[in-house]
Image (tube, rainbow, N blue to C red; front, side, top):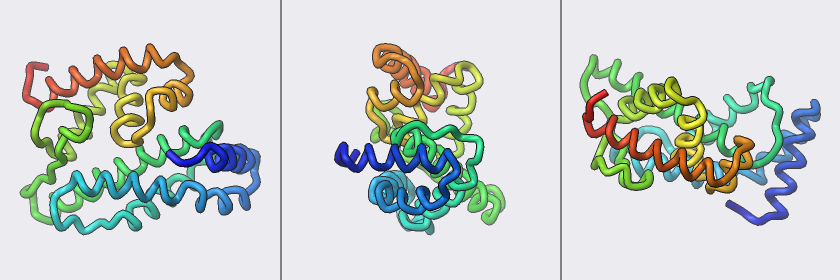
Length: 191
């Protein structure tokens, strides 16, 4: 996730940005850009071959959405990376919806979930995954957020705990439950 000096500097700049310093936002991007690009590349590796989005375009689209977030009280770099992950998920979901609309209902995109922490299903459509995560968040918002931060954000259990303000044990317990729940959902188990 980067060196601790870079993480500390990114956190300081996020807090300054939250305080109204627009130049802090500009200085922060180089500190998190490589991590965001690795995250985007990881997403796109799980997408179908020949995906029209490139990691750089995905990072830029997510970043544009991030800088429009005025109500966020930035507290640390992990929180920023977590929200960037959510934005990338939204970009990919919108891209998949547009692609399906272009094909008039055919060609759902798939993302292998074996990379996501042994969910057990070989493939699931990106829209199906999105809908399953939405259902999980409807049942328990924190569990849905943990999955987003872990799967889409690549955050560690400690970073998730810090971002959500809960203990690591809570994150691990809810991650275990969420993985099992999602496995059932995407494997066509009963609802």
